[in-house]
Image 1 (cartoon, rainbow, N blue to C red):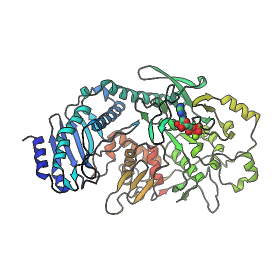
Image 2: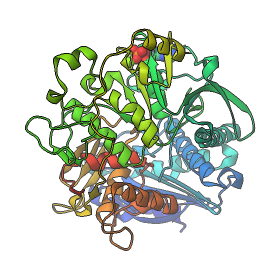
Image 3: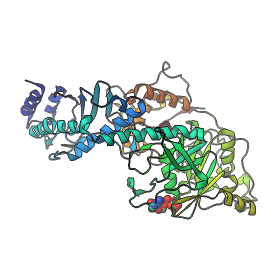
Length: 570
Ligand code: ADP
Ligand code: MG
């Protein structure tokens, strides 16, 4: 009896029995060209679907498509999407209760990310996915399961896991496009740029809930004075707008496309799939969107460069609160981004606290400085660049106060950018501001040293670590609200962040110094992910996780900083 027959005979035997009998399926089955492993069986039809794995014995993909880590990430991402397409095209039925017949692979939307769901090597192609084992009520539907496992699944595997069955050009484009984006990003620093938006890009999205390109959108065209040419890996020239290091303002009338441009820059830290419209919108990897986030928790953050002696509060060099205001949360978000290693801050007036961004002449006269605890960002923005090398891109349509400080001013007009730096300078010269600079002392902040044991994923009976959508992380009894962390794009990233915090909470002296600052903790986690892949993140009992995608260090830090149990030394 071969393995397929063995599987069929088990399914016949347990057909109609209680759901628990599905546990008999656990094991490894040889299907000829690949093996199927049923790793974990869900407890009932409503629980998270069962964990399955396919290993294709002879990897048919040409080695050049995965010969370096960049190409490997892109190819694995492609295969996960091909598998999902196979699922969507399959005659799989969702008859039955709960999650019966659901076939899921983690594959993302518009962004190409490193994922745990597909792993390719010279002699093996491994796919990890989930299947809702079918049941009527809680009774096993053996025939249904047989149809899926014996007939449909092999068809999906054939269609998605064999090079010769895939549209070869599409595979190559996916990999090359990703590689080009990485290559362009690697040139930004040398060119003195923080971001590049290629001519012809499509920035707006279909809707607030769809990240697909807006049909019929005005395509991006760079102004000649900000136009730069970069080379792709194939030595082809691409032109587009370069946003230089320094202080950059984006101005323009309401509804002319300012926020759309900034949003594209925010997500330009990721590489996008072909035909997204933002494949060649490339931002330096360390860009962090800064916004106001009232209500968030803050743990001993040194915000004294922005906030001094607010009422009822002493020292702001160890500022803590369970409920930050708009301005204090925005100041905190800046310090935390710098602490995590960012040297590029992005702001949109739509999501900023006005009193944090500006304080004009009239207000300075009416409310004296000793009654105003806030040093507005305008009095730090140039210092941050000159003294600390921190660039900013600010969308600011409602105030001209920043003209004096800006190195570059870009105006959006009917969705097209214009370089209005000289005009803005002229305005600033003709209408000089009499506002006083309000910073006290130089910009500085103290490092913080997080306590690993203050992250408590296994408080209570058992380990609790998961994501609820993109925006919520569950760690033990705690829920971390990440809805205002705008550069997080997938719930699999959120889950991976939870796992990363778990690893930090269990880190011992041998792997990480007892006392490490936040930057060192993030360096450690990133180095491990680079060396060992995302599987490094898995807690015991959850080895070879199925649905993790690579988070950035800034979002790992963001989650740690919002965790209500976090304790730090400073
Ligand atoms: P602003 O921030 O300047 O007020 P937004 O960026 O919010 O403007 O854009 C306003 C509207 O215009 C949005 O609905 C957006 O989708 C749309 N939009 C932005 N850029 C383009 C474009 N290039 N082509 C077509 N529509 C666009
Ligand atoms: Mg806007």
